[in-house]
Amino acid sequence: MIPFEHLPGFAQWGARLDELLLRSEALWIQGPAGAGVSTLAAELAHRRGVTWVEAVEVGTIADWLATHPRGIVAARTAPPGDLPCLALQLPGLEEHPEAIPGLLSAFAMEEGAEGPLPQALGTLPCPGNLRELRNRLLRWKLLGQLPWTTPVGPPRFETEDLASNLHELERFLLHQALRRSYGNRVEAAQRLGVSRRQLYLLIRRHGDPVRGEVATGDLPQRIKKRLPAQNSSPDPDSR
Image 1 (cartoon, rainbow, N blue to C red):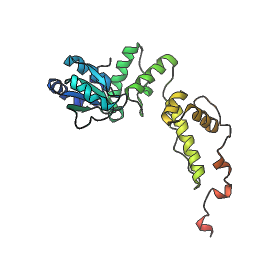
Image 2: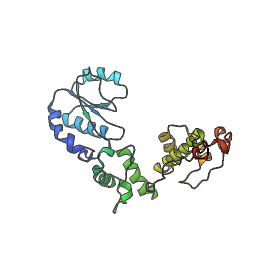
Image 3: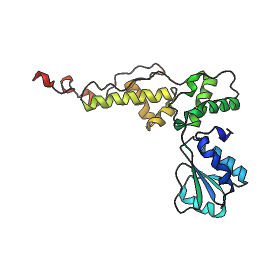
Image 4: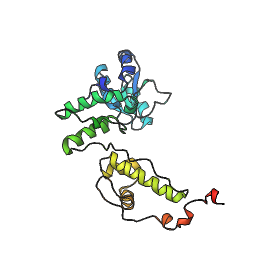
């Protein structure tokens, strides 16, 4: 388990832990996915000598707290106002990038990764916070893969045609998701919020820059129907 002293924002909320542990109320630890909420909840429960639970369904937590008045709850969202507990909000890693070196060193020790770590492992953005950071380390250790550090560039909106611009934006988001997931298509689909079938359709349409697959030219009907002359407004200077 990663020492919670390495968690993002510890310098701000760490000073309150001893006081929180002495309070009679239950503790509600909240934060984004992978921010170390479960790590901290487990450690505080150990120090209090109580049990902890993940708030999968907030509505059922009231009954649990009735029988565990000093218990610890790990959750993604804030507690309802009628629950007798104190809330502690953990920030995301992108809010505290200074925590990255310490976390990487701790993960490397846990995973037995030897030698100096590549600087690219600690670059932002890092969606998923601690979980994504650990995944980066494991991919580098096991597969020699590093995060994609070359910017893909913003979408090129070269026309005023909505269909063409949506097509360009789709390409940009697909390639960005594939790069950030190291070519892992299941993860890329999750990042984009699409099914795996939809992802493969997008890859056929736009290609895969990680695996070097080129687009097949399978354009959507909205693009095929457009005529070149319809892709831009008349030049006002030519009137």
